[in-house]
Amino acid sequence: AQKITQTQPGMFVQEKEAVTLDCTYDTSDPSYGLFWYKQPSSGEMIFLIYQGSYDQQNATEGRYSLNFQKARKSANLVISASQLGDSAMYFCAMREGRYNQGGKLIFGQGTELSVKP
Amino acid sequence: GAGVSQSPSNKVTEKGKDVELRCDPISGHTALYWYRQSLGQGLEFLIYFQGNSAPDKSGLPSDRFSAERTGGSVSTLTIQRTQQEDSAVYLCASSLATGLSGNTIYFGEGSWLTVV
Image (tube, rainbow over all chains, first blue to last red; front, side):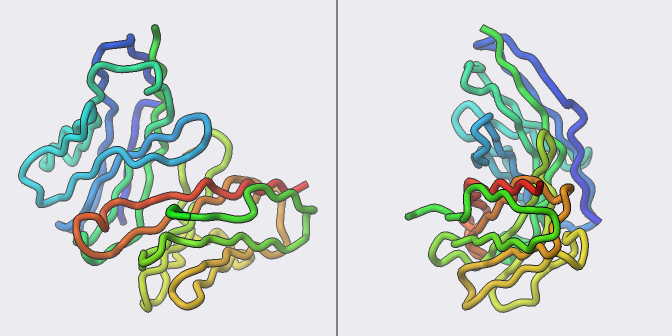
């Protein structure tokens, strides 16, 4: 069974500094995808970044990058140059199966990030 | 609209009543998901539909919960004989099933259910 673990319930970071949010996963399927979502206090789920298990390079999207360490089964999110608007809940999620076959998406418990001015 | 649409946005119901929550996915999206999120908690997977395949119901917490998807588009999540512990936000999401863009899963704004 697939499993996602986020061990940091809460994190603080100074504005303009970088922060790493941890995520480890467990799956027996060689094909899977890893996602990060941001959920501000408004409640909407905002897609940030995706990494496929067969992708050769770490995914990047603007200030977001995913530090994918396949052997360690970790997919940490790095946010560079933190902004006050980055304060939110962040969820790591995993979906088994190749990208063209879909599959249920399982979420971790989340990390609440607070950016201090 | 262009996004995932959920209704009602808010629902207050009495314990023991049945409720129906509706999700209208993005046009053309063949995959549809339902999640439950209690206050301050993570997203709990409920059910997943993919095209004409049998849905993955492994996350439904009890037989009071059911969902259907008619015509491969709109989905309805039904909770029978609601209990106070059913109070939560129910989130629906959809995605394409093919291509790189299929890896992006879009969420609706949720239906806030309160059972009193």
